Structures are given as structure tokens and as C-alpha cells.
Length: 89
Image 1 (cartoon, rainbow, N blue to C red):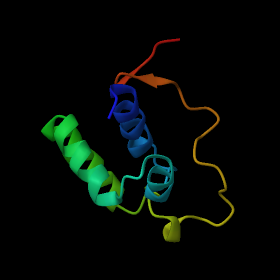
Image 2 (image 1 turned 180 degrees about the horizontal axis):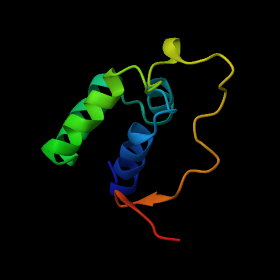
Image 3 (image 1 turned 90 degrees about the vertical axis):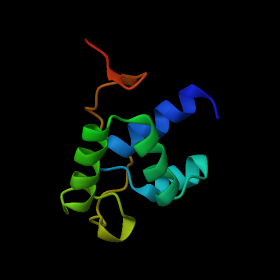
Image 4 (image 1 turned 135 degrees about the vertical axis):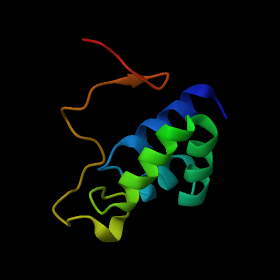
């Protein structure tokens, strides 16, 4: 897998509004694969923060938990993320 694809999966995983099903549809990565990738690519503390947020109920990473009025995967105001770093404007 190319680095840009890994970068995009990590970006999508960090976005609270992007469900795991969207990652599965685009890249063929299941939730378990995403968790494994995040564990491998992130620092331990970053991974722990991400897992805590995903499991807290704030995140809408699972399609069945999402509000049915949300039909997009990405917030229109989100900054661009490249190489796992938020770019400066």
C-alpha cells in the first residue's frame, strides 16, 4: 500500500464524522484493519487518545450510531492533512 493511501486512511480515521464503513468502501479496510494500522503508525499516546475518542460516544465512527441527517463523510471546514500533519494556512 502506498504511503499516500495510508495517510488518507489515518486522516479518515481521525475525522469523527467519517464512519468506518466509508474507509471500508474506499480502501477495503475493515474496522479491525484500521485499528491495527493506527496502532502501528501512531505514537502510543496518540493511538490511546484516538481509541478513547472513538469509543466515547462523541465520535460517529459507526454508521448505525450516526444521525441519519448526516450524508457526507467530510466536514466542509476541515483543514487539509498531509503526511499525518495539519498544514498551516
